[in-house]
Every structure is written in structure tokens, then in C-alpha cells.
Amino acid sequence: MTSGIAFSWIAFSIMVAAFAHYKRRSLIGWLAASLAFSPIFTCIILLCLGDNPDLKKCPKCAEYVHKEASLCRFCNFAFSDQTEKDNLPRRGKFRTLQQYEKWKEARVRHLSK
Image (cartoon, rainbow, N blue to C red):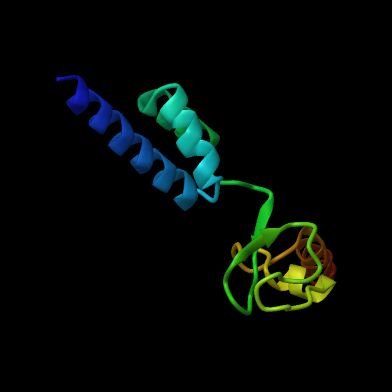
């Protein structure tokens, strides 16, 4: 009976660690926390935390690196300001608020003629 509980505890802890790795969190850290405390407890905390916001995706190799990085540690891709602008999510017609404001001013000028 005790060996079945221990096996289940370790198996669920490994699943929590794999889920943490999927969420771009530390696999070893979450495995240790899950083994030490409870797989259910650490899974709930992991669900509340969500993805790691301190990472960005390299456009060349698609690996995640720190936001502050200027060079990808996997493929040595050099990030630039233009690269950062290209990685902005596109929402509708305008990528930035400044583009929308310029369009709005031009439209007002055009309609007032």
C-alpha cells in the first residue's frame, strides 16, 4: 500500500515538472517542490502563475531567451530594435498606437476638406 502511494506521488510529481517545463518554468525546481510538498498543490500554483513573461522567442531558431538578451544563446542571432518591433503582436490594421494616431489625424484632415 505504501509503495503504491509513493509511486503515485513520484509519477504525479514528474507530470507536474513536465507541465512546468511546457510553461517555460524550471523543470528541476518544480519537480523538487512537487516532491517536497504535494503534486496537487504545486500544480495549482503552476496553473495560477501561467507562462514565464520574462522570455522572448528568437525569430531564427524559435528558442526562448531572456527579454534583456541582445544575442540568442542557441544560434547567436543578434536582436535589434527592428527585430523587437517585428515581434510585436499584430492586432488589426495598426501595430502601434502611433500608427493609429497618425491615421486618425489624416482621416480627420481628409474629412474636414
